Image (cartoon, rainbow, N blue to C red; front, side, top):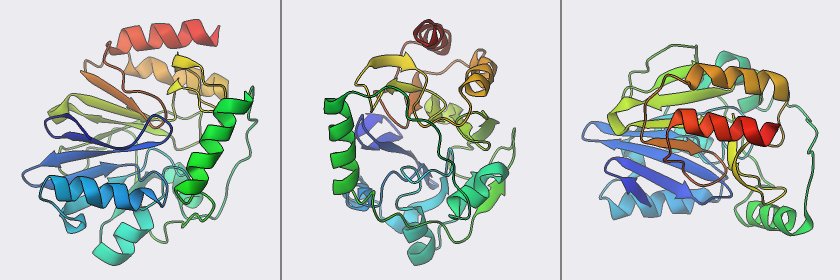
Length: 237
């Protein structure tokens, strides 16, 4: 769906990936689950584009619900996949973590697991080759995305700042809709390796002025970064 001119979302509040669409091509931010491929193609067709128009996929981290169709784009269409060096092995499937789930509620948990299964979450295809990125790097991709390292959820967790569409893509550095409890609003994300580090990392986002903050799970946020972080800190206690 189109959120704003040049800014599109694939998926929904349970699992989302995003597209930055420019005249020069498209940058994908995250790749959702494998079954989001059909949603991607449908979205591209609606705007008169095709997978070959995607110039790169930037992963906010290497977890399975963010790398879904990345390898398919790389293998079949030659699209490079970018990930922070500290998460490269995770994206390739060479290592993983098993952080605590935390609190859960049966209804939201069942919805998340059912949706993930329906979208191919049980058949992860890892990325065979990645391009490693570093903090502060501005990538030579449509929209000139800037990499902001936010370790905590994973060692190589990043936010992606794209001023051209006034958007900040935060992956799982935080969530606005907890998939395991159903709680809404800015808050710590589940499946996080180190919650204390994740919370501390968010401080570097405070100066950013954007119209959109887009997490990998939960509704888009339009209330400004300071307000987002204030709500997050209140929820985190």
